[in-house]
Image 1: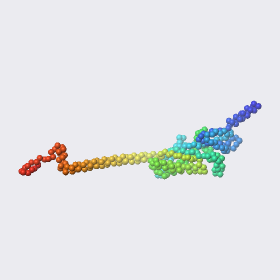
Image 2 (image 1 turned 45 degrees about the horizontal axis):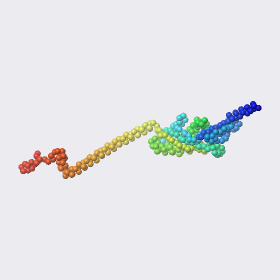
Image 3 (image 1 turned 90 degrees about the vertical axis):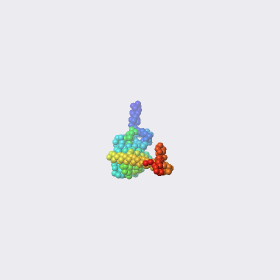
Image 4 (image 1 turned 120 degrees about the horizontal axis):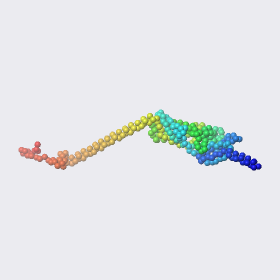
Length: 305
């Protein structure tokens, strides 16, 4: 009898320890698939965020992020390169930046392409894309497969949107005008959703809530050098013009002062009744005799020679 109970306990222990389990974080959800030794592999249910489930032996759980995710380019692991594009005037430029987005999926039952998915778009995403690239989370961390999904289904459409939007502007506008750069970003965001949906077959939108930040785009070094030279030349021309304007202003000011001084002098002379009287006043002020001595010669008054 004792041996029988020990055997039952051992079997029970094997069953318990062989059970599968999942523990989702507050920012992820999971799909649960039956995959035991005596069952066919098929979808069973969704697991909400912040949940822990124990399921049958051999069952599998696949977790996906539902919080905001980021697509940084270029990436630290070099999976994503700096994006290049061509401007309206045919200049190739490059840009780095970050695209924020969310995986927008629902577990509500849904019919897609004539097939009913008990797990809704979450199940559909897993079977169409996630499972193909092993894109589900591993121990709460993003997998290499997730990075692969982003490079295929987001980075490529983003590259296309950036290139198309850049066709509206010249390289000088994108490089120097912050308002044009903002218009460029908005144009990229407007085109991106349709391009992403087309990449994922277009029947269901898996991604959304996009926000994009593009850094200042870079033209080829030769053009950057030419732009710097051009800016230097403009700065020097502006400095020379400012100097010339200052000299002209100074000359005009000096002329105005001289003219006012002449008008003041003329008024003083007029006040003395003429230039001769003014000279006499000046001589007197300098201690000189403004009146020449007079002599009478032959009955005629004459000034000395």
